[in-house]
Image (cartoon, rainbow, N blue to C red):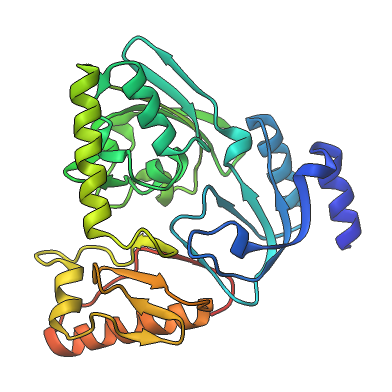
Length: 303
């Protein structure tokens, strides 16, 4: 059965872009996680559609990832197929004030193209380590900016296998949410509309935000960025710090001493250690303040 599925996948995509038993620690920013049964890297929306059709026919579970920047994969891996939309689907084009990019394009690369083209409004995303697809799904944001402020249109693949263009007013962007996630759509590409600006000023703003990140975030360690969603009326990092958990550690996983909102892989942590740390932090904060911290990080596999 396994060989049969491999053969069907390699009929669609060349063997070099279909891997078996691929360690997921190579594809997540936490740098943890066991092997996925299959790991597929499509280059076009037609390849992606065909791959998903084959997987559905085979009743094979699948999961879409980009840069793996908001993902914790079980140490036992994933019994299914991981479809990576990253470097093989990362084309960026600029036309006037519009930037159109494929879902696998890194936000950092899009920000660099915006700067190069003298386009302002995307500076907030310059330091976010994820891809455009994931950013649209969860309405990623930082330093007062969000994707909802700049996205004009998204092309998605529906669960029924159709390509659908959604204008911004149909995306229902909310805090770390969108209609894309709720309806099981897969982002293929998006259009971003920015304003004309001064290159020097845009560059200065990006550098200012970069320095803020360096000074306040533990960028020197593997992590998934902010680990918890912001609870209404509070800041997760402040609650964790006030609960006395700065530097709290489970195995190689640690609450960052630099920013308590980050759980880091300090020293060869396992996914189980990271998950246990998240559980204990959440329990301690709820016990002390009556506030439930909800993880922002997605989990894949058995925990």
